[in-house]
Image 1: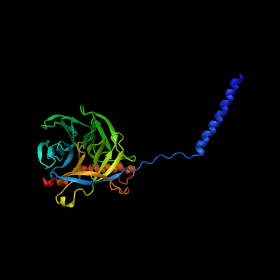
Image 2: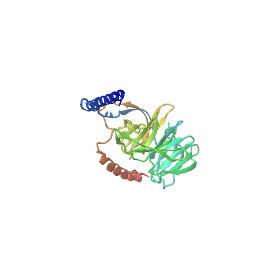
Image 3: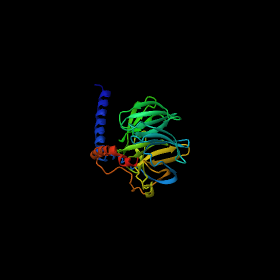
Image 4: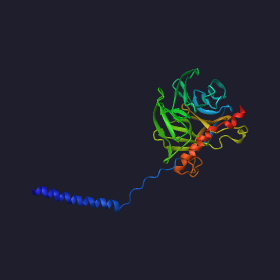
Length: 311
């Protein structure tokens, strides 16, 4: 071995010793950097801007706004419909009744179409927007709850913590998105609306909306709508908060509920008190969540049954 080779080997051995020393030092002298804790998302309250009349017999399952009118999907077997409603007056200007075996659910506008989901039937209807003429039907693998779109894909909920993205031409599923708050799934996602790059979702059987990222599924905020419908409007039976519509041209947000006599235009206000967590995940352990969700989804089978005597 020549002198240059010997020097290279000795230098390599020396460097190796220093490398081991530095590696050990990195493990002993400084503690590992702790994983960043994800902050709780903000909670928003609301300010009522205007109140509009709403059909108290409408079991609202889907809602969308365009050009001064609301398009509404209503549920219950034998009473499900697709409607065009004048915002200012609540007057129904066009209505299509679904066959009695279908339970109407989520609704969105895609170009010149209205697309409506059904619940257990797992069948979607595509209508010509101007005439309500049925153009085609399609099917999907799980229950139909809410429906919106992001300008590229249709986005569907089924009452779980998963959102399904569909091709609006073929209705084939292209991807799924798990919705989560600090790593925990957010169940019971119901009616959906795409608002300024976010998805707003009703959380079934609560007075809460959730704002979420359509890219990551992370919850960006909770909206507490408790007290929106006053006791004077509950003299006759009403059901849960459900129905979100957005007027992008004028930045107006509308909400209502099943069998509610009013529809509200609201403006969101971030709550100053960060400890006010009326809208957040319940204090359940992860293993309990699936059991809890299964129980609640079975309970939805009775959703509206106590109201049938009214009709």
